[in-house]
Image (cartoon, rainbow, N blue to C red; front, side, top):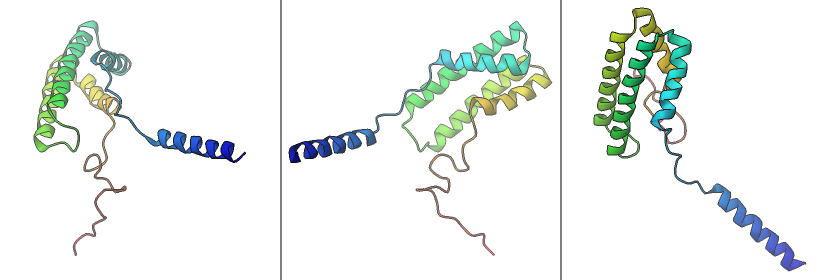
Length: 142
């Protein structure tokens, strides 16, 4: 009886330790999956014609490829200022290319659509919020 109880306790301990171990983060979605998501949102939000959709897909594909290379060439967070600048430059290039393809109303809808593609980060970026590990609350200077 003691052996059975000890075995069960040991087994539960091992299982609970195994459940707490976390592996590497999942890989990002493929470019094809991201393009599909962009296309679905664009169809529902932008009312774009087939030429505009083709240009939108081409522009986003190039953007995703450049962003993947940028992520591959840079280590995991926290991001360096050079990475952030490069990312903003790529986003600006993408937006400028799409501004030439979409009319003014579509471009406004596109800018709204971006928030659905990638929700905004907390102020200061990841790990810099007010949660555990973030900076302490600062009182305004008087």
